[in-house]
Length: 144
Ligand code: SF4
Ligand code: SF4
Image (cartoon, rainbow, N blue to C red; front, side, top):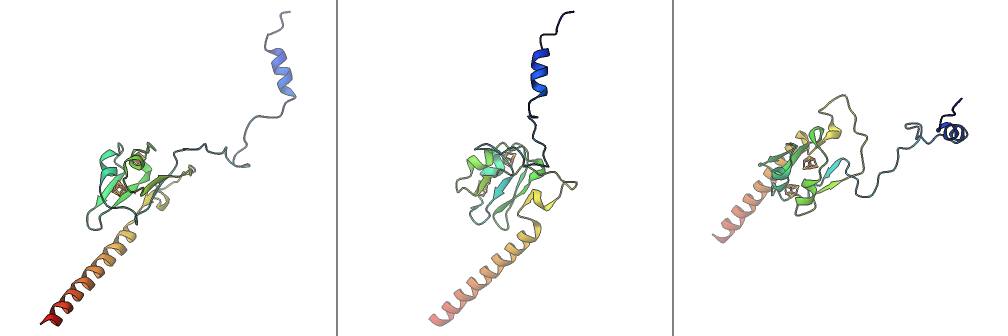
């Protein structure tokens, strides 16, 4: 009888430890340097230049003119990193987070700059504008 050429490999592998990673019983395989995971947005740094909106191939990013910031629907992101590379003020970064499964496409974890945050910023900007106008009026009336 002809012995299959792979038999010795099969037999030696029988006595070796499994080479699998039994996730989630163990940690996932570590991500390499430069891994493109979930996008992170730093609204405080953002200057509202809209370059990220222009380069995004997946229509993830939307400009909010009232507050001169952007919002992201990360459920559509293809992790290409073009927005990160184009941002002139480093307001965007790719993290190493990749466990993003959800049963709700509008999950808060997949959003940046959510509606309530936009509303809060709008309010803050309006208050700042009013305070500025009041200060201006006060200065003008003092001159008179
Ligand atoms: S990583 Fe790519 S797909 Fe995702 S938001 Fe940035 S430009 Fe769009
Ligand atoms: S490219 Fe950067 S600074 Fe410009 S809108 Fe996008 S996040 Fe903001």
